[in-house]
Length: 111
Image 1 (spheres, helix red, strand yellow):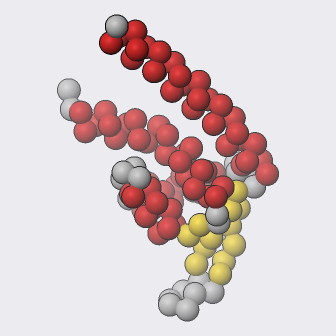
Image 2 (cartoon, one colour):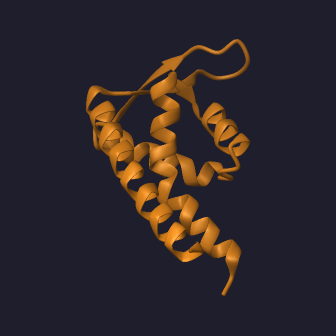
Image 3 (cartoon, rainbow, N blue to C red):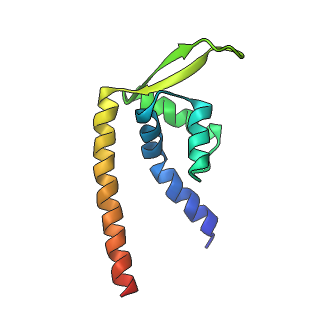
């Protein structure tokens, strides 16, 4: 079994949650999102992020605006919607339940 593949699947499963967390803190431009994910060791590529952002926008969780840039073309900044904040709250509750369950299993395994 390939550990890198399993790790990648685990990261992919929580990527949507992480992106919403980042954008909820501050409106974000894709390179900023990628940089924050990479600095947190959630290694991703642009090809993974754009379809996910489009899906989140199409479901009403995110919106975007264009801003002029001093260097190059205008930039698309994403922001979280009220619906997105409500969804993020639900994800946070799910994350807490999931980590609690995993930690419980881990503690029982180590006993």
